[in-house]
Length: 456
Image 1 (tube, rainbow, N blue to C red):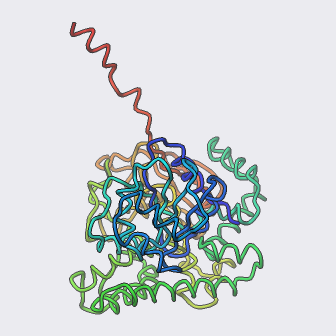
Image 2 (image 1 turned 45 degrees about the vertical axis):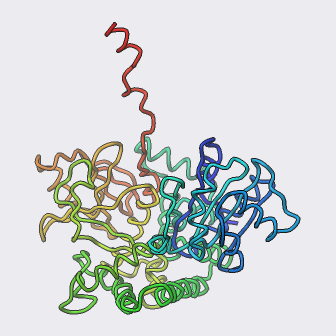
Image 3 (image 1 turned 90 degrees about the vertical axis):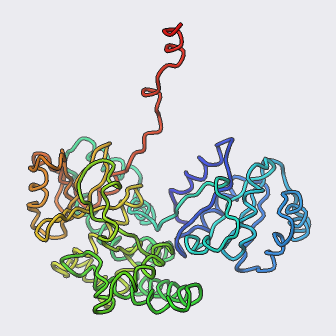
């Protein structure tokens, strides 16, 4: 089974004495159910696994009173012979979008110490709109994404010692051994083509057969299309599909801002804005907003109606092009066009590292691929897919005192190096640019007792 980082999130949640029911969101087939079941098996004596898609009859457990005792009584009838072990039981509500009453019940299960609750499902960003009484304040939520590059390396059998040595090079700003560097670039090219959907990664790890991987990708895309037909309103179905089908063309442009006119000539957000938002809420795509100014907090300067759209999995994006696209990526034969895939994979990698996505394009002649908060300050990020790594845009922004940006990162195929305020990193080191959230405020909170003593 694939090793996933979300297991650490589950363990941290379980160790919190004040934990609430955990809701695991994410697109179809990112590995939610598999990861939760593995965690449950390793950490609980009793597990009640309710899959509302496979067993619609289990919705009856939540059909009447939502009192915790009543729910447990109905569970005992649905699972004869299985008992609640106080403090060592997990109730897993899978595909919870199919049981609105179960979502409402989370409020009544939140503070019962006899058991823990984890709920998961797809399309939750869409389906929650229909819940009559959503349990706001009674749940914790975590988003599960496809495998990131480090998880992909684990799946390929790369030893942690190699990753640690790469991290040491990153921290010490020293070049990676050339053989290792070239090998990591090849793995990163494979990651661009295979992506991070667990079924695709598992298949590739076993067979190294990209034809089989491509078939998995196309099946997932078809499942997404079926979800649109099944769950979207009648007036939105075709518009959503047209937006999704336009993404390969949108990303192939030099100017990658999403243009509704590519979806349908002469049309705009009034017709397609809601359809595009549907794809975002379904975790199929993500938005990257333009900034009016680079300053902290970045979100305060985001321009709502100017954004790029990226697929949440690069392998799925590759499958939306011609059948030989993956091979051409791996062989380095796409020329300037490969920039679309490199940008998309960096976007999804930044998401996995807890970054919000922004870019900066104040004019037609200046564009910074990404702007992130890194080590407490705005930082420019430029992605270079080719051999030419000159950074005119980076230097223009860095040299302009109006922007107050102190540093930039350039990701390319080159080894580690520094050029003034630009840190040059190989593409695969994106996995080390984590957005560290400082939760320790002790140094900032005044000593209350000291204040009182002074007043006295």
